[in-house]
Length: 390
Image 1 (cartoon, rainbow, N blue to C red):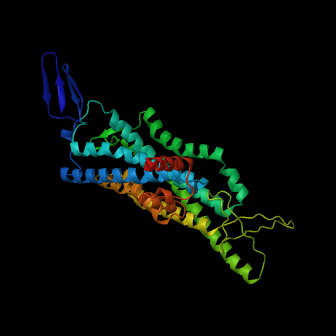
Image 2: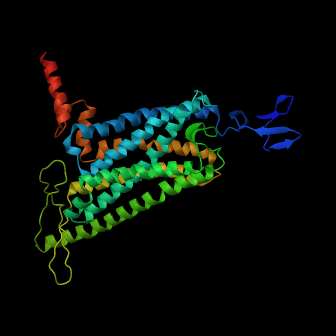
Image 3: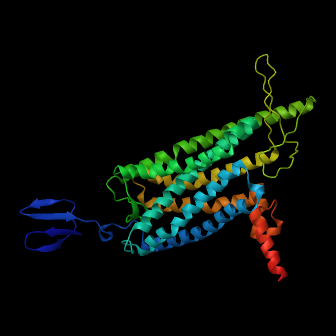
């Protein structure tokens, strides 16, 4: 709708795409939801909104359980699992933003509340959670690369407890910068997107395309390249050194079995899959021992599955951001993306060698079956025992 102002009369005129300054008359174009061509029928929006609400509920429950598992059991408290829990926090953060977008879709018009601030906060949560997930996956891949291919001393030096605080902070600070900095220079806007009826970024902003490009460049290439290279190097390394293990066993060479002191269980892991990597530099007989247990390989494989699931879910959304003509597909790409927040806890419960031992008793409400209970869990069990005696 456009408004015509003159010295005597105030009238509304049909929407115009130009500003006219003639004889004291000013025609101002104001875009509303009524002047927009709807990308999706209302029935489609209702269906997608229901899907988002279901995903939000399941994602909040699933990721909260992963986080709670780390609180209740020391069994999952390792350096790698700090990043796994951080990934669950990012997924939980994203899921908490989904109900607001569902409200926007069900309304199918202007934002219904007096303030758009809740929608703007939800948009910020959506984008930062997505970015933190990507960078967490990249950091997990680097963690696995160092753990599998380098000596244990190197791993402990790089991923020390103090440095882990910095590493986790980086996984959040980069997405926040990618989302906030363009806004400070007038590129894009967060809030109610009238085009897609969601709480994301405003696609009607004059520089919305530049903002989408900034997100794509800031979130996608660096983490994805890091992950692909890391797992490729791990694959080559494992193939080479397991071949050497078979050869050395046949020749009756000395094989030393090691213990990964970074694992939370604190027990010795002795397996036929343990390997010692020996390096000889020139004439010096310097040996670097890199212990690879079967459990470490299972953890790496599980986290690679998490990456594959995330890639399948996120790629359609980022492709839709990169291609300007794919506006109608963006909502469906985002719907595919949010399913990843539900998939990850399922993968952990089904396949992760450490988390499944904690999550399965939690699902059955058998807290006494949780291995290596933490002080928090022991306190809960103590309270329950007292209540049972009363």
